[in-house]
Image (cartoon, rainbow, N blue to C red; front, side, top):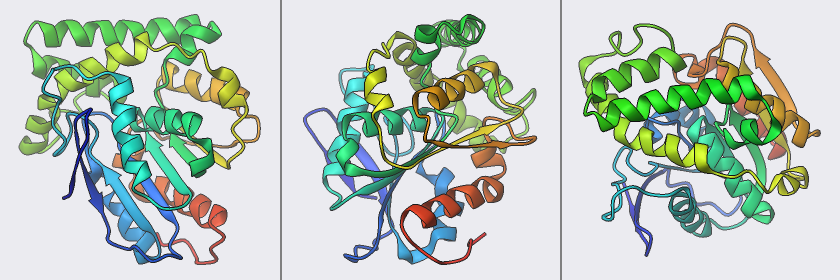
Length: 282
């Protein structure tokens, strides 16, 4: 995969190689403890009609941590903005969880470049604190604090177990193939840093969110966490024109565990906003 070298750091990304002038541009941002590979089913379903890029976020896949250690959200966004600058014309954005929070921030900072925005449970936790959703904020703050403590104490596997128990369900890590357990466990230090950054971030630019005019799709599972539901509720309030879909029986990791189901909504939305007439490719 190509590697983007910037003053901030390096970013590895997948590119499907479709660079036709007429092809709509699409950037896919994965969840924490995953990589661009989580989007393989969606990339295959969309086919060659789209120019698709899917980066590995910092500390995931083939994108390394910066030499100076813990990256900031500003550095993550700077890398993604550098990748965005390489794409001609308007870009459609899809993000899940941590990737959804990054997609939201890109749209806020570069609204003129974003043609449409689709998010599955973005973890913009600052919205919970600043809106007064005390129970949801307390829940995620406790989860994050415990995760960070486990990582700092050198117990990455316990952190991985707790992380997936919260977001997926009890026993989720143990049910994974061994190589995936190793990969996810290896991401826990990165996830701890993401928790730190997300909880410290100030969501002071709510007026920017209210002014976003591009089409927005908000997806949420009915069986997800209180914190994830709370963020969606705030985004529905701030983005009143956004289309919202609640997936019955789905949890936070549905884009990975039920990709065909989630992708049907994403493909329908993307085809609509791009003016395409193809039937759903799922």
